Amino acid sequence: MTGYLLALDQGTTSSRAILFDLAGAPLASAQQEFTQHYPQPGWVEHDPLEIWQTQRDVVQTVLHQAGIGSADVTALGVTNQRETTILWDRASGEPVYNAIVWQCRRTAPLCDRIKADGFDTAIRAKTGLVTDAYFSGTKVAWILDNVPGVRERAERGELAFGTVDSWLVWKLTGGKLHITDVTNASRTLLYNIHTRDWDDDILAYLKIPRALLPDVRPSSEVYGETVPYIFGAPIPIAGIAGDQQAATFGQACYTPGQSKNTYGTGCFLLMNTGEQAIASQGGLLTTALWQIGSGPLHYALEGSVFIAGAAIQWLRDGLGLIKSASETADLAISVPDSGGVYLVPAFVGLGAPYWDAYARGTIVGLTRGTTRAHIVRATLESICFQSRDLVDTMQADSGLGLGVLRVDGGAVVNDVLMQMQADLLGAPVQRPQVTETTALGAALLAGLATGVWQSLDDIARQWQVNREFVPHMSADQRETLYAGWKRAVARARDWIEN
Image (cartoon, rainbow, N blue to C red; front, side):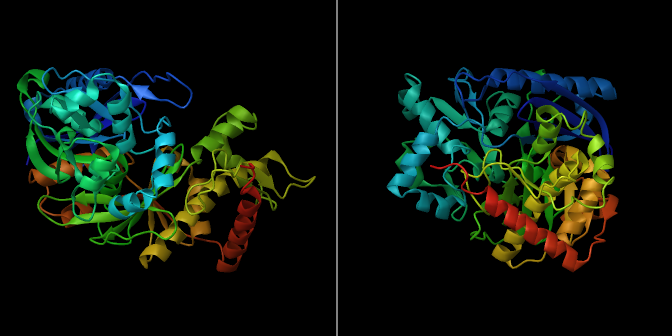
């Protein structure tokens, strides 16, 4: 076959487009940042029209860079920042309010009321999610309750709700398609991952009209095509997935137990649990992983490390211990170990498996012999220990062994960090040849739907390792260090008195 696959990668701070050949190799890319709006402390918004404009522009830039026309593109896939919430007018296509971003905390009081009512238990059972302002459902309720006239228009069926994928597909198809995929639906707090439908009990509780909601479709399917006036010729739209699920697909984690970890500001770790939606006993999220065509829905356990790369930024900007992140590798290996120092980066509390909002950042084990190299090394180790916390919890919840951990994100260029992760996990860590795994995942989903690949096995054979890091540390040493981490975490917990 000849042609190209185009990925739209719509993120929290920028819109990107990447063009891949039919072997999955990136050929051209473009990126454009857009405005972050902070109308009140704790509130975060985006302009949906600016999201659309920047995403459209980077696609045109990529096609121009590659010297091809839209008629040469075999299919297009969309991946997106998850949970960010948009409502718009079905007739005019105009948003009724700014997009409320996943980071926005304005609905925390509503989440507190849900918990006080005890309804969070039902939400957890139905959606696999914890009741938190992070997710879309309470954001929809806030817009309906706080923007004048919106509730009445929604009840008359005049408005549409969507996460960013839905908004982009609506715009790309000139308003013909109001859809989302299972991965994005599963992050709304409104979708029952067991019945695979919007949940009437939750909709009634939050007073959200069903008429607002998009149709939920598989992650890999030919949904329709772009209207010709946007890019020239129409392009089939054939893949949609939220960013973390797309990255897992791009990492070819297709069998139960396979896992990937994305190292960015925080870490997102997902484990494929196959066709089984496993309820976590350790505070992890149960989420849709993908659905290929009319095949079964696959699930994952997901856990987040709140502070990973952000701890490196703090060393640079807060403490002035380093001038750039690239210095951390040489500093960390300039000492044989962290000298008994542990840093717990609980700057915003601790997530799974601790879920302690009152924990705070802590450094323990300091002596007169402690140097900045020890603190830098302890900071890198903290990223690895937190990831191990999640892996251990996932294995306990699922009964599945890890095997290897596949890694992506900006921090994986740090070989020292990756070797530490292998050592402290006791498992091999694989860095892929193509590290743009989120965009790649969207492209692969689109290619699978349009016959570029016939099966997941075809794609898995194509996935290539750039480097594998194998554990060198003895099991005794690893477990001694990890026990020290758990003691350090205990000292960081419940620091802020409620």
